[in-house]
Length: 164
Image 1 (cartoon, one colour):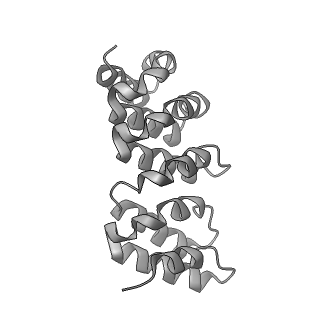
Image 2 (cartoon, rainbow, N blue to C red):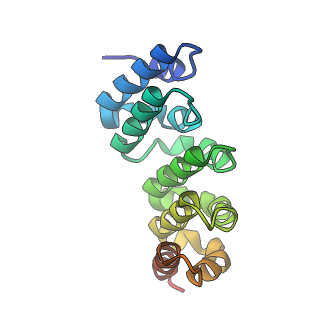
Image 3 (cartoon, rainbow, N blue to C red):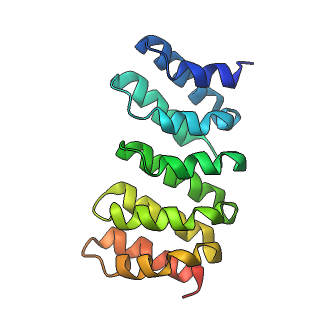
């Protein structure tokens, strides 16, 4: 079996073909690639289209990331790359209640990115956390009144999951 840590390192290579091959192999490993979750998210600013497509495919095939990566994923919510912010929120949502400490950071992301997919994904992630997302209630109430129907729906679902 491939060494997932070695593949995660390959995601940062200066060589586009190496990045693409590492991402492709991680996508093939599916859930077994979860130890590379944060590395995949951090590398979403790839300028090579093929490598980026494989990175997204790998992220789509992952289940929940290891809980010990939650702090790194929380940090990635502040990335300059919208795709990294989107996937950081997605993976934190997949952690569910185990990502409870992410509620404040997801709330900030929701407010900052209300007009795009990363903000919507933050609202979705908060819904997956249920009552652990209570610190985000105020931001969710604001987002529930959004003119963007998808954002409003995700925020309302999160409020219902929290219980208020």
